[in-house]
Length: 80
Image (cartoon, rainbow, N blue to C red; front, side, top):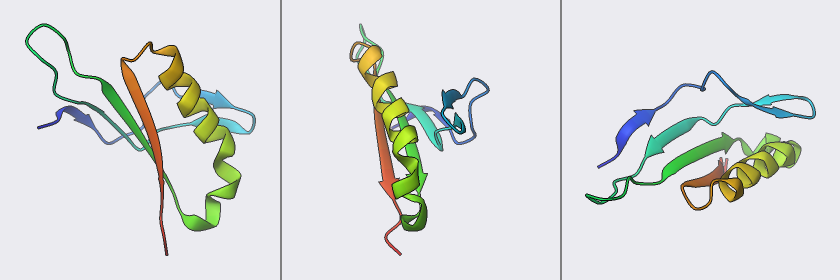
């Protein structure tokens, strides 16, 4: 079960070269009694915008890398 699902853009978005990046979903995955679960950020881009979203993917990967294992990021693509 997900804890604290968030399906709206957060207030503090990550800056990118051409604006700001807002993940589509944020949620905290279940943890254990002594350790909170990781935060998962999910971005979504349609297939027609995938190539232009490299900045967004880079920001998401950087955010996850700087979190020291507390956060994960994935961007999914619409396959239409």
